Length: 77
Ligand SMILES: [Zn+2]
Image (tube, rainbow, N blue to C red; front, side):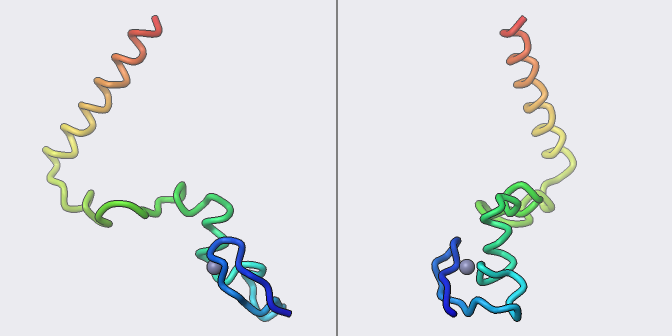
């Protein structure tokens, strides 16, 4: 029996030999479950770009994020 992967539409054999059925792969299953994006995977942008940031850059990003959060909180108060 052939089924179409709900995520990418690829036709696959629906059998017990496929542990990801009805998906074609683990990747498609994770995407459908919404775990792909939330589990540390990076789809957009340059993968590994964070690794190449200097400690100073990481600190400034952290500071910027903290400031933004502070401003948001201040408006609420
Ligand atoms: Zn698929």
